[in-house]
Length: 357
Image (cartoon, rainbow, N blue to C red; front, top):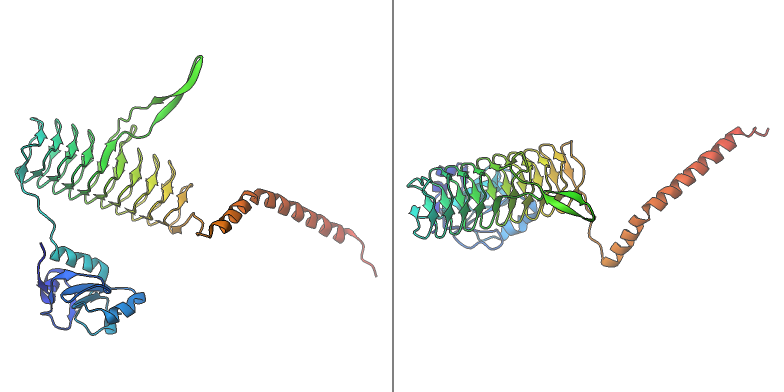
């Protein structure tokens, strides 16, 4: 369900300054290029000036430095993108699941479910689970024994919370994510007269998720081997991410889809990790680091900055030549060292000869 709001009503709730008719009616959000009458869009990048000039949106959210670029009604604010997100939420309030427990849900007798919680169809809640107020658990979720979920947290359909894990307040776990599955831990053992084999290492730690964390669809966060895996306050994880055992993700870090973080890696606060990046285990990354999409991080990062570890795309034939050259780098290095030594020797010989008068 959506609502109609005037610019004045929006500003009264979210702040900002109106330029133009404050009674302009807004019914939806839209992009500059595709917005229709009644829509509000946003502008924060000069590469979209042509779209701004040609848009038929009824209003735009814009920074003060760009406000003179258009004459349509506008809300002037410091961060147009964040403001746009808040307007979208106002116009499209989140669905509120009905309170109560669906008859097909299976809830252990040891569990006390607050009356303001919503427990969907075919949910399974095992023994000694603790639920806070206003928790929403979507259809098909499984909450294993001794876990806890704090106030106002939402689990969408088919989320699995394994035993002993703790989920903080105001978290949002999207469909299919798995929290607290066993980490990938095996020890190799030799056997007399037989091939070596792998012995599974018990994973006895937990996953601890702090408040205000979002975890995307089909993302997995493994439990610790001994110590806990920890996702700190305000972390945002995209879809299809793998967080391995004993990792720690610092507060307010954002990680895009298909990232893999190997065991015992420690990621700092306010980091930004691009899609499909890979981070090896037992590394540490300091606060406020940005890692480019597709990068392979093989060493700890101890200094703030943006890090990239990938080759730009090329035509396939060119890439094959580049790869061949990379394989021969050690040969080139040896030749350069040889030539440097030869040049040094010739230089010394030249200096040692008596000068002719």
